[in-house]
Length: 312
Image (cartoon, rainbow, N blue to C red; front, side, top):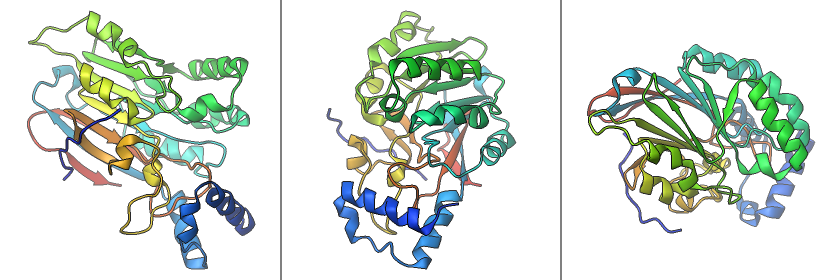
């Protein structure tokens, strides 16, 4: 059962390409030089973990959940990193659509290179939900595109039926649900106050409060989210460390909360229910080790029970 914690907040791969990737990663992160990644057994383990997509299913309970949201399922994908992704579009689509989500959200880092723009259709076109598809940007979505290509990227997402939230909120009146998108904190594009502007201007009645779902690529905007209030905050970015020796914490999480030990899974921090998705793809080195890729599903219920979780 996940703990409720409130810490203080301050501001097919060839063997040759496998070891070439490790060399580049170690050059950037020298601490990994102590990892015993040699050997066929470990290589096989890493290969399995890289391709073994998990579905994490959560039941979340809220005493004041709007009636229209009862049994609503939200699907979260994160960190596709299409450049090196070897999980097929068909596998991802089958895993998502099998759970019949009412809403699909994608919390950033879809692409890693310019040529990934040509892969968007195959991975995103078949993902549909009756209440809509929503997306926020991650650091890699900004890092490799000119202003011109970024405009093309945004248009492609719109053409595929995705609503992009750049420090912006959308209200779904039939669900009494605000979806609040905070732009990427890792590249300092986040503006939480701007993202909440419409939400705060349309305060709901105390007897019929709206549900606030917050999306952001990184948890580094949590201070502002906690100040403005959220019923569920979905983020990614950490990859759960991506490479983690059994029994040890990851060496790299790239977030403030990650440094404090919160780099994956469900937590309640500063009053905010938070889920940190380990993502689907990889960054820097095209493998995962002891951190399988995941798709997360959250089904909302009225009540006071503790969160329930199982893996498929």
